[in-house]
Length: 313
Image (cartoon, rainbow, N blue to C red; front, side, top):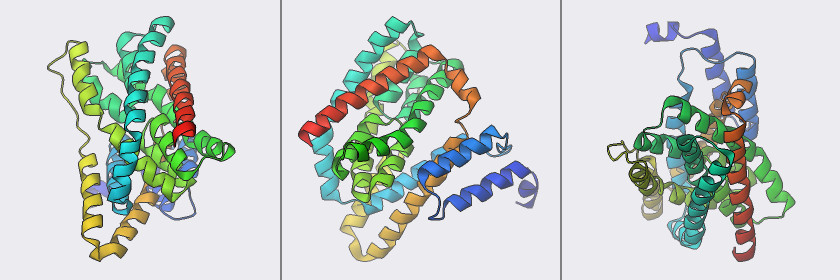
């Protein structure tokens, strides 16, 4: 253990120290993202910490923790009410992605990964589908960079637009869950908007994330890669289990509320690590055509879902 600690660099210790400071109530999600981006821009990226793996694991833990603060009745209500919106948005995004990619002449697999990432849940969907279609590292990197840039922007833009449009907590929760890519930014944006928005957004987003499984299987058939491996987001099952425990074993209610609050702060740490990827290099790596495709899909689904939500929710 001591030998491992000695191998850590100054940048590693700085990263750990700042990550711990984000756990305090004085740093919010957008602020954590900016801090991470600033450190990366200054070349203070950790040398011996795999940010991608750490972020993925912390996000899974924090999402599971959020399950302790959500009512089963509300979860069923929000999921049922948003079912048509979820399925419709996924189908529309994938179809639109095919058309726009043809017009922009974006490489087929890169375009498909961007479409899937926009339609379902950003980087998680790209990671799950890429083995099924046998995408190479360049295609995956371009798709991730494109989705990440837009996902980071959404964390700041959506709460501002929500307040500007006077969206209710429920309306904003649905909109964030449908129109923002990654789960981390969905819950980050919703948390800054309000607790009810967070509950709605988390529930609907995870219901949307379940579509990774059928979409990945269909993708393997479409790209004739039936031997592709499928990555299943198991944390969704633990999230559901957390909801069941907190609702049907209420004797530890104070503990559940504590876990819920800690999980919200832990999301800030996830956003801090995500900020390390918001660099000029990654923005340039995305390229103009993939970025235009991602932006077109994002604007279309955000606009269409907002109109539906304003009309029916």
